[in-house]
Amino acid sequence: MLNFIKKYQKLFVLLVLLLILIRIINVASLDKDYNLVEGVIVDLITPSFRIINSVQNWLEDSTKVVLKYQQVKEENEELRQKIKDLNYYQNKLEKIMAQNQKFRELLNFKEYVPYDLVGASVISHGADNWSKTVMIDQGKRDGVRRNMLVIAENGYLVGRINRVTNRTAQVLLLSDPTFVIGGLVQRDDSRDLGVVKGQLEDEKLLMEDLAWDADIEEDDIIVTSGLSEHYPRGLSLGKVMSVSPDNYGLTQKAEIDSFADLTKLEKVLVITDFSTKTDLLSPTSDNYPEFNEQKEVE
Amino acid sequence: MIYLFYIIFGLFFFVCQALVFSRGLVGQITPDFLLIIVMILSINHGKTAGGVAGFLAGFLQDLFSGGLFGINIIVKTIVGFSVGILKKEVYQDSLLLPPLVLFCATVVNQIFVILFSNYLLRFVTLEQAVEGVILPLAILNAGITLIIYPFVYKVDSYLTDINL
Image: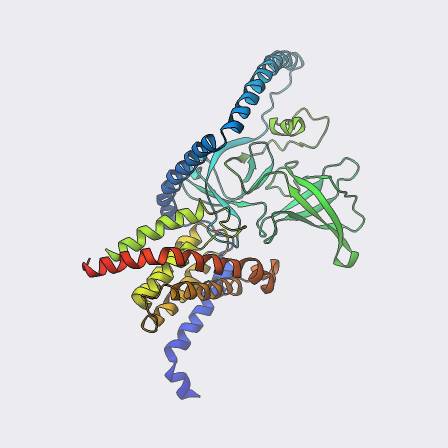
């Protein structure tokens, strides 16, 4: 036995070191930010993503115009009509806003600022099949930090910042299985709580740990619960597709269709500050940020 | 010069992997171009080149992926080194053998990634992973190798002949 070990001594040492290394990686690296060297390498590579991304977009746009000429023409007409309608609504809105401002001044209301946001473009997607991430072109120098939430332009939750370099940041998408956030049924006569997370095999989200008698139905809207001090309350997550019993009937789980199309993200917003702690769920609150209003219009 | 060619080629395909094909080339599956380049390098230049290329490719992949940092470094180094050992046993002129090697290497690579990452088996069973990701990815990688290997092999042979 000793002879056998002596003969393959190097191999044994290598194997033991490898197992220790794998153990360390599993303990330490799932929730890890980039270090200085890694950050510099990522920042050096990302300009090539931007170049190829813009070439890809240009190619897609050009071929679309050529191949779908009729559709683009109709789209153009439709957009012209929409611009006319929007101009009318804009004028109307400006009048209402001016009136609103006057009333606010009369009643001595504070001007409301919902969240501090930083706009960003998606420059690449995750490079493997086991995680769901995107890279955005804003980083530490733009005020982006780890664990900040990321929303789509229409206000739907997209994910959270996982790793940051000076110029870029990696966003862990809502559909990644390691992304977990508290969810709340938005309906006034329910308000039940659960844990929302992504799934590896599916783009649908899963809401688990709902009480066995929780009042949750198909088409209910799920929003962030805000129970954690790190995340704001009331950001829209998705719509309930189906509800079924879980843990032998002790709890319920729901399948949720995310509002944001996570496979076609191009522009996103990072919430850099939500210290106003506004309750977006309160129907009487006049503190509704613009994106929630947009959702209702849609 | 040969290695410079592989670095440029690898970086180009990596950007494509993270950008153009990130929404899935077939279904939801993103091909692993980095593994393809590492394997081709291992088959043509042996275990040391394969191991080093595996380490660098794994590092790059870990930087741009969301899972455990370091897992691809270990797995790709092991797979790159192991396939490099086969260099003397494999006819590099054969155009059908590299896709076969890629198929097997992809299966081994992905199974190692799952087994070495504690958390993945919490979300998916090994059977689901093989059926849903590993086998389609192995077929996809083998198919891509069938297309790009003749080109890489010709450029590699040319650069070797002119001693660059």
